[in-house]
Image 1: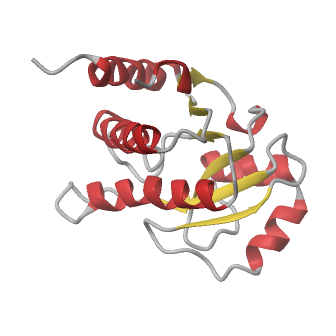
Image 2: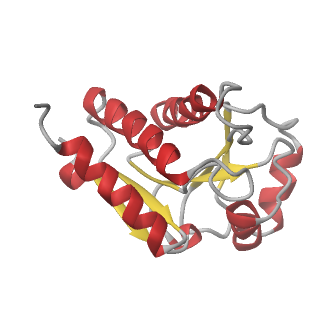
Length: 176
């Protein structure tokens, strides 16, 4: 099902040669640490200037900008949930991040897209749980949309990539 349309890699999302990369942004969209800071640094000042015109972004939503100095044509900014123990709607907010990004993918004719592990850094969302939500949303989207050729999950660490890989294999297994 997902096979050649989904890849999980360890690496730097800012170097991915795809139509769009997803930024795990904060609600201001004006840069920050982690993936957000790396994307803003690599894209250059044009990205920050465009983000200033967007009036921020709510958790679970997404907005799109140009890619500027990145190899990607677009940056899709999404604001993931801050982890508060799992009983404050964090799972649904994280799932909405992926759905909001995929809505922009469809609207803009994106054929290849790279995602980071949203909310699992400074926002503290447990990686195991976040990866299952991410993979379920990606699989659901790929099942109903065949115009997207490839989705890449770019993990900063090898350990995170291994967790995503194991959960992707579980997703591929037929139900017993």
